[in-house]
Length: 270
Image (cartoon, rainbow, N blue to C red; front, side):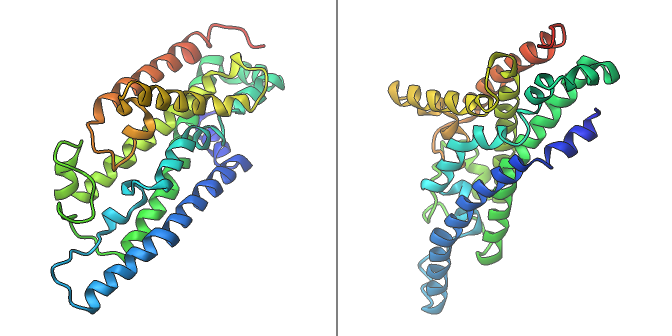
């Protein structure tokens, strides 16, 4: 099973469609309840020639920059959404004795590497695709102008990427996609690496969610909310977020590579 085959399989599972449906429901609710009201507000500003008011930009209306319930729910569910489509495939194959046949054909180490890459990419795409659709919908009904410091935004000068946000908002969107894509991929491969430690298949899917919730609770307890992925992955987070993203991302990635790829390639298949 080559990488191309693994990627094709990862986007054909019913679980991939289910994860998209769940996130698209949140995105559509955000668009209908929040963005439509902002669009009406923008139209009122134009109709009454209220020049003192600055219209809401598409970059401000985008769900990733909205501090309300919707984006938080996506980030809270992110580990499940990322892991659901394909992280359990390794479990299914080795429990069904398919894995041994594959190892004979392509080699165990190559199989594990291809699986890891496919799961990582699938996890990132699964979470980011609905967010991209939301951004495009916002661009369709809102002016794509630079956000104004004194207007609708929450970002303050000491926020990470605040200078980019106010001067190059589209670049800021790309950076936000990068943050979410990478960590969604990490959540997915972290679930994949837990395959040999769990008894039941869908326990794999909730592993990342438990860790995500634990970090959020710890962050609240020690008054360091920046350590929680639900905080540092949010585009509206007003504190520095690069360091926790890099530290936690590298830590999880190293754990996965060592345990799943290096040790897994030397171990026996159950």
